[in-house]
Image (cartoon, rainbow, N blue to C red; front, side, top):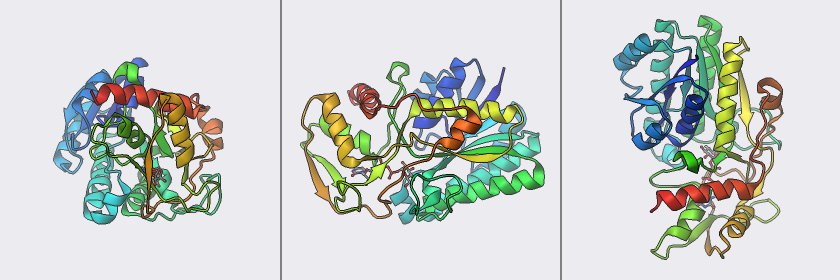
Length: 328
Ligand code: UFG
């Protein structure tokens, strides 16, 4: 049986992975400071929750010493680009300093394996689509820099101390596992699909807003690669297995390899909801690249992974089912 410490397992992606690890009979424990994570999501994942903050170095050392898991899966991070521009200290303190504590505690306890939750934000404004892992790394926000710095730390700790890691660079996580009571819940919400769906559930008359319609894309709105959270979860399980089987440390993109514009997403949601979705056009959000689409070739080759949720309508349908219940 694989034992895992799932740091940040009270969040949207962390709890989805925790749920899948539990379903595979892993002995998984969730650690979360509950600043943006949720105790009910951790409970729905079927895992024990330990409340701790990675910035509490002593506590993290004690926790690793006690658990000594086969593998750590690290999701704990602040993850809003705009917030990171306004409050970089929070991002470097929480994401980078917290991770230094975690890695040092792993070394002190002899824990060698870690799956790290990275992001397409490490690429900045891409000069080539689809984006492969060899694309240059040039983030454009403190959030992106914090993820890139951690990737660099992992590489250095690996060279110096033999730490084994896989950095998984997510494109746009979407959808939910409504049957398990797991889905996306951020306050405030900034992501596209939840904002569209919540605008339809809201009773205050506030309509959905599109940030920019003059990008150099086919319809002028931004293009993203939406990947179902269940596919992300399976990729983590496979990445963990890959590391535990002696696979080399590396970074891997996780995306569908297909781009959809904001207007495509609205059209898809319309089909799913069977109703019109009113919207207003607003100025572009600062720091939004026009197009982000992954090459998922490496994930297929190295992790034997491919997305099973290939229809955007189905991805949005699962999110709709979750938000309808969660907003009751
Ligand atoms: N958008 C809107 N209206 C909204 C919300 C979003 O038009 O209410 C647009 C955005 O401008 C963007 C697209 O929808 O063009 C997707 O936006 P999201 O906020 O859903 O996702 P992002 O692409 O901004 O963010 C994702 C990850 C981040 C990561 C970032 C890298 O969620 O963690 O990619 O650029 F940092």
